[in-house]
Length: 406
Image (tube, rainbow, N blue to C red; front, top):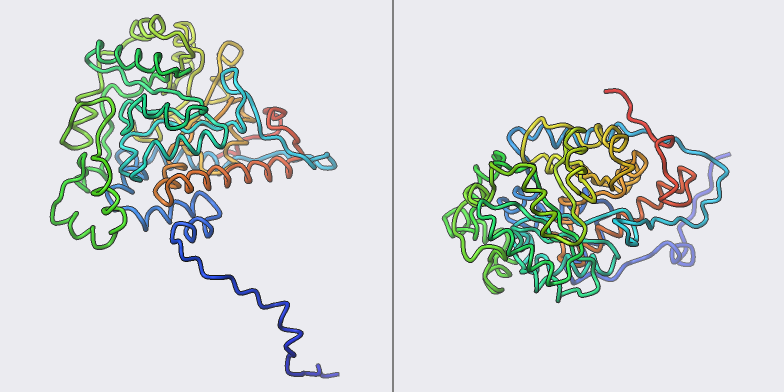
């Protein structure tokens, strides 16, 4: 029989009509329509000037290392179990002896106030609210003391590059100690700066130069430029002043002569937790643990130093097997989802260090954007654990994950 047709009645249509009031706040609109870190990345790309977005988004040379790191996570295969009670999922864990709401650390990033005028202040407030550590960079744009005062209950870490001037490095370490920071992160994969070609092509300088290109960019990103020009001047917490390209700055700061005895020197100076970041070989992992490191970060610097460097996720199991019984093993590079965090944890990492992910959130919406990123990642972790049949993050082990062949 043919289907009988009739005009819809108002009573039938009323339950289907759900008109949302318009969102007048553009930041809220951007964040509410972002459901993944990839969405936040796209929102950041539209909001920030190209040179600023490319500084965060880019990597070294042909960016092969970064693509490989992300591809490794795409090859992860979980081993789910069924008929497990996953009514309550616990993402909490312990990072260097202290509780964290999830196995996530917000990593050190330079020039952070370029991404958003509040910079590290916004990030540390979000970290404090989320219950995760945050590491202030040597090349940060907020001082050690301001960083601490902005979120006094946060877990404060400080990242150090060994300068050519060791006395200057020592002074920074002492300031961090006096400010009550509990963890020092020594980055060791930067004897010289990597070739970040996007920055070269964009002519990125610190602070941004007012050229014909940037003046035209103001018309496309008026809010970003207004915030930059009407807030406190962009400065480095660890440098009195600087005007030049990013490559010039890091060349001035990085020391190609740093060797193992410098780690020993730092261990003697620092009473708290010492983390060595940039480990890409099992023998180096053993060496820095022998020198007194409390933790290591298996990392290729987000693909921003040596292109074609080892993929951190691929070498993580060997590093954990070699030193995991003597130190905490952390991982960064390529982590973009909560499922990536779960995979790293299953392979033996105590936690992951996020960089680009929260910077996308910061560019998209300041503190609220970082919080949105953390909420997205937490929800993805929770869903992934439930679908795997795992109730607690700390119950993960290598039997629940594998890397599919290339």
